Image (cartoon, rainbow, N blue to C red; front, side):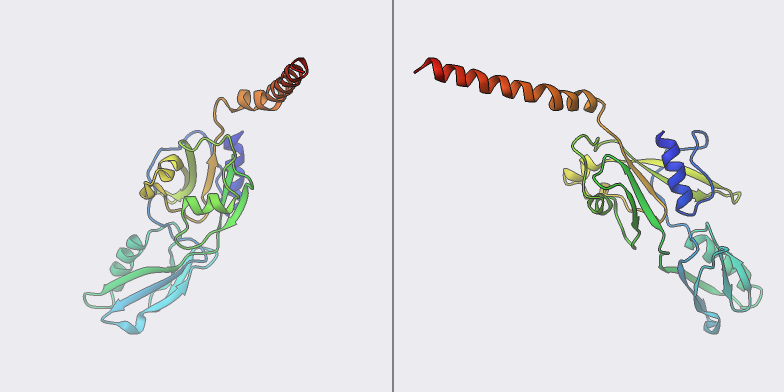
Length: 228
């Protein structure tokens, strides 16, 4: 059920592929992959007249002086920098190219599971896991903080999209290990699981505890009456 929900959310976050059990690998958070809507600066030295700040178009391309349309979606800034260096080398002697993502696209991130207000939230540059949890209203009482999952769609070397999942540990963040407060990327889906014993604990709390309290109250009233 969780995989179906994550697949749907990834699809709604503008990723065409859904999450499936096969092809998912446990990885550490990686660098940003360029997406439509990103604003990129391309600096060309010594031919600075070709330097430009561009927005990635919906088809995943940018327009570069002298080179024309260049497909960049799914690439890291470093990869794009190397590709542009090779292309400009045909026209400029020993070019030095610098590529920076100046602004991330307005893609959303999503959080589901044991939070008070699950759903979509606007992604902001530098957004981290704890911020998203706070925006969702915080954790439910039975959230399992040591076993979160972050699902992310990335573009493979062959150009195809695949879904990756990695672990996140909020319990360690709460213990002061702020380096575990991972940075999110546009389109990420965070899943907060439920404690394994939560169903039994909640049933006892909702059904047995009120009767115990009532029994204790009745016993105290009985003892008070007998003492008169």
